[in-house]
Image 1 (cartoon, one colour):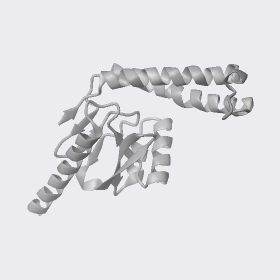
Image 2 (cartoon, helix red, strand yellow; image 1 turned 180 degrees about the vertical axis):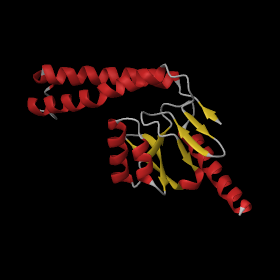
Image 3 (cartoon, rainbow, N blue to C red; image 1 turned 120 degrees about the vertical axis):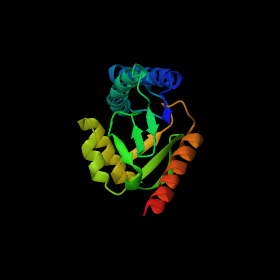
Image 4 (cartoon, rainbow, N blue to C red; image 1 turned 45 degrees about the vertical axis):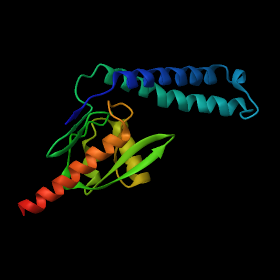
Length: 179
């Protein structure tokens, strides 16, 4: 099964990145304009602006790149999962290497954590330094370097979770039948 990237969702992510970049740059250049009762210190606003630019700048580049990427965002087949929805591009995650799944939510975004037997193998496969560091942080925080979000895909999270878990269970039954 091939699940393609959603151009509509990517366009919304693009707009969100632009909005956060504008506020980040504004916070760096003119922090006093953004002083409120919650954020009274211009230095804190400037630091938040720098963090925002450092995060949303690369995110914007990734969103633009993915917008023009015609490959499927996710391929689910008899061998496993190939995730092309993010910047890591780690290749095949084999069903036989998957131990299980967990649904988490970060800022109202549902994410499927994929627990694998050899986490460091996947971290090493990441095609760039930033992706490797991101996967390492995910591994340290959630116990696995692999996470799949439906946000850039043409599928909702519940359908995505159902398809992946059903295919994984089928692969386990098939393996038992083969043994």
